[in-house]
Each structure stands twice: as C-alpha cells, then as structure tokens.
Image: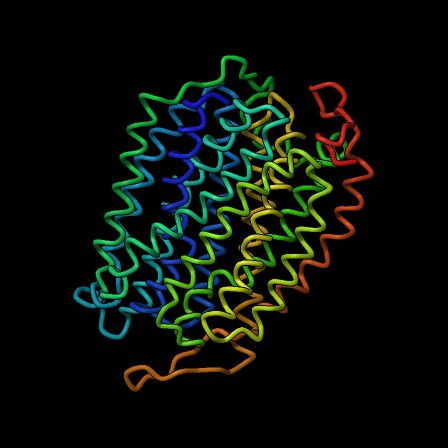
Length: 438
C-alpha cells in the first residue's frame, strides 16, 4: 500500500460513505419529517434499496471482472451517483401536492422517493460496493487487510461525523434541497477525480467465464462447497448486519423524538469520534492476532453495548453505551470483512462483492428493518407534534438486536474448522496466526 493508494482508498471510500450516510440514515429522517411517520414505509424503502444495490453489485462486479478494469466503473459511477443523490431534494409531500391529485400527495411522494432511492442505490452500489471494493481487494495483501478494513470501516463513521457536524443544521432548518445538493455534488466531484487518479492493479486477473456465468457463479452450491470458509464468513456478516439494521434505520429518530436529546448531534459526534479511533487501532490488532480470532470477542462486546443502550436515557449514558456499541460493531465488520478478502479467489474479486452485498446488505436490510418496525408497532409508543400523534422508536430495539447476535457463535465455530482449506485458484491458505487466527 503506497501513499497514493492509501489516499485513494480514503478519498473514494469517504465520498461513498457520505452518500450512503444520506441514504441509510438521513433519507429515513427526510421521509419521517416531510412525507410520512409510518415505520413500515421506512422498512420498505430500506428493503427496496438493498435489493437494488445487491443486483447492481452482482452485475457490475461481474462486468469489471470480465473486462479486467475497475477505473471506469468507479469514476463514471460516482458522477452519476452524486447527481441522483442531489435529486432527493426535489421530492416531498408538499412539492408533490402542487401537481398530484388531491389526497394522493403522500402516496405519490412515497413512490417517487422509493424509485429515486432505487436508482441512486443501483449507481452507488455499482461504483462503490462492486468496483471500488474489488479494487481495494486487488491492490492489498493479506498481511495488511485488517488495517485497510479497519480504515474503511472507520470511513463510515467519519462520514457520519462530517454530515452531523457540518450539514445537520440544514436538516434541522428544513433545508433538505441544499443538504442533498451539497452531498451529491461532492460525490460527483470525487468521481471526476477518480477518472484521472485511479490505476487498476497490473496483476488484475480477468474472470475466465462468460458474463452470465460470472454473475451466477457465486450463487451456485458448488461454489459454496469449494470455499466453505468464505460463505460461513459471509453468513456471519449477514447476522451482524441484521442485528445492526434492527435499530440503525430508526436511531436518529429514537435519539431525537423518544429520548428528546436536543444535543443528539453532539452525542453522535462523540460516539463516532471514539469509534473511529477504535476501528483504526483495532484493524492493526486484527492483523496481528488473527481475523477469525477477533470475531467472537468483538461480537460479545457488541452485544454488551446493545444491552447497555436499553436503559440509557441521558447524554452521558447514551455516549457510554454508544461508544461500546458502535466501536464493537466496527471491529466485527473489520474482522469479518478482512477475512472475506483473504478468502476471495483472485479472478473473482468483483463477483465476491456481489456475494458480500447479498449477505451484508440484502439479507440484513430486508429482514432487520421489518423486525425493528414490528418492535416499534408492538410498543405502541407515540409523541405529539403540532397536534399530530406520531409513532416513535422504542428502546426494545436494542436487546432484540443483541439477541440476533447469538447466531454468530455456530457460524464462527464452523468457519474456524474450515479456515485452513485452500482458496480456489490461489493455492493453499497459510495457517499462521496472522492469516486465520488459528
């Protein structure tokens, strides 16, 4: 990893995470504030985005493997991604009401935002989750991937910090159009930069299969039988993702409306800053002591943090519990993600990004938010704003998420037993502590 590559990893990753922060968190707030408070709508929005993003990653990842290039998919994809992100500012119930049939403005606005979100997710997943993530696998070595994955995980938190610290005031003032425009143009500008700076790996191996075969390869049972440790690790990623998606789509609304923390941007800033430090330092420890070895301790710490969030009410309690929760979540993702890169066949880095999206995004974002919505509906908690009774997230989201994490244990034990098997097309896997933590 040269300085140039580190810079591109950070700049491209951070720009992508800015857009994903808007899509994964602020778009939910935008819908809640300007269109409808129904949590099922948010769950549908998240699920539709996940399905679209997964399809895009499968298609674009396989295409980049076939042509043996990542650069055009990254650069052009980022530009289009940024422009569609800016377009969210044009959608709201009030804006739609100026031309939609009377009484149907909310329904039309919901459909419009779901369609635009799917388009944005397709472009973003193709550029970031398929091409950029495959490029990172191409240009890194196993001995440094824990550090790289720790930094990439940290970028998601850094993006949240930038949005909360620099742009949250726009959302508080209802200036959503400016908010989406700033983020969208930033992402598009980074796409232009990528065109002139990104260089594909000189040892990038092209996929030997036809395009359709490349798209479907990882979904075949034979592929799972050939590389069981990879699929077990992806299963762990899915479990951690489901637990996270139970509460994350509703987190800002919970802090703002349920706990009534007027200082929630500051609370989140402190939590995310601390978790960024832990993620970077933790990545180095993961490289040193073993990727799989780090999974269960990090998962246990994640569960402890989630359980601590349940009784937390004031800023101090939420900060303490949030630091443990988000830091541990980052460590779980860094450990599992770096192990997945190690198990990726050299000629299928793009295809594995599609599999990663199936397990890390599609499954969690289809299941998790609906579990969270069911918990919210079951609690019956509400608040009144401007004479209107609205539903509010409940603290029961956090212990439910912790319960989901119990599924990590059998998957981890099975992965440890199979970690020494060879990666298809790459020869035997080293069985040192550094590589498999065994």
